[in-house]
Image (tube, rainbow, N blue to C red; front, side, top):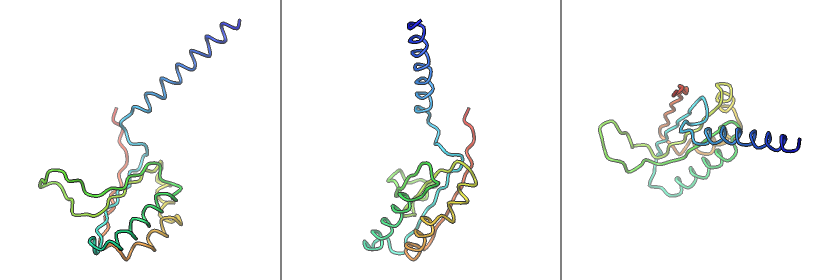
Length: 136
């Protein structure tokens, strides 16, 4: 009898680890809504402005309650081509599970604080929101 329970436990453990491995190895970004924000700073050469912006945006990233995954980056030094626009200074990407989460995020204190602390530092912001399409 003990052998049956042990065997069943081993089977269940194996099955659950297979499911987790498949999910962990997925190349898909987690989150139904991908919120991509591009910032052009007023004076990207001003190190005080850059530091203030980075502190504010990293505080937003640390304190938001609604984003699942996130990325903060600068333009990559990839090959210059006609289709590439690397004129921005920073790119922020958040993912959200639902439209509701993305909407609530807009009024979330962490987001509003970030805008209040950093809005004077940028001359342009573009936002691209996309809805995830199934790959399979």
